[in-house]
Image 1 (tube, helix red, strand yellow):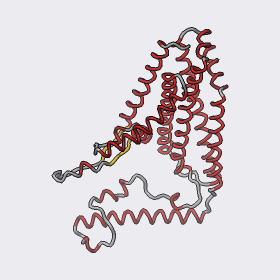
Image 2 (cartoon, helix red, strand yellow):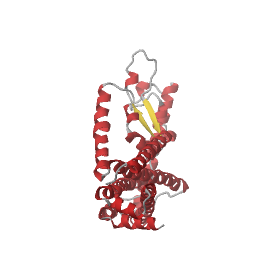
Image 3 (cartoon, one colour):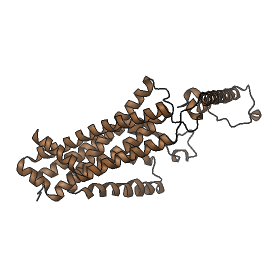
Image 4 (cartoon, helix red, strand yellow):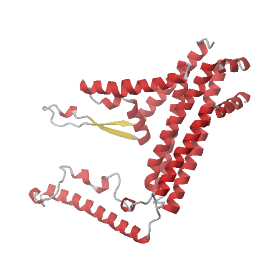
Length: 337
């Protein structure tokens, strides 16, 4: 228990961690202030007109879909239709659309919490993920480079216990920070929506969907924190983690993607880690590859392919587990002097 307390104090006392916390607060403050300055509480007239426009838009969608169905049935001749209609009427079926027009779409300069909460949460997740990776890498990288780990081992000469305590303390600290930051962040924007905008429809479905997104984001934050810690442990320096990420982005996400597209490799996005991160956060991601449809002998084809959250979870946890195990093995065997 004394070791955990000591590591918590060391983590909180690091200047880099304190600097990142200040930047975190500043980023959130600027976002909240900008939102507050650009929003106002709508009048009854504005709400009424927005509700009317939303109803008209939904009616227009239903009319277009019915016109498409009438054309398919031969009730309406295609030459008489003055607007574009797809061959597959399900493409414009309002019942199958991800989102129908709502009142907030027609309110200008009004912040609606129910509509903006999820995009704002993605911003929070992205910042916390970057925060976790950088802090995780610097937390162990600086100690290894400066000899702080060696001094700690003189007090507690058990390598696996020391490294495990460091990682556990780091993940626990990131979890607590994420909880506090999420509550303060979303609470602030709820207040803005309540008093300087519109709360929107905050039903059980909304909170359930937001909770799932937040849970996925928290896991991603912890995964990237552990990856930063593991790579810095393997490289014995903070810059090792930063260099690894930069190298991966330049060599693989940009360079290898370009080469595979030149070589006409099928479904390039399934080889990119960023695709699995996006699929994990969103539940699934669909990509389009035109090459299967280039074969003239193919009677039918589809260029759509999907990356699901299940495969993303397996990949992310597998990568994190492999790097963490490798870091512990290297830490146990290497000379720390």
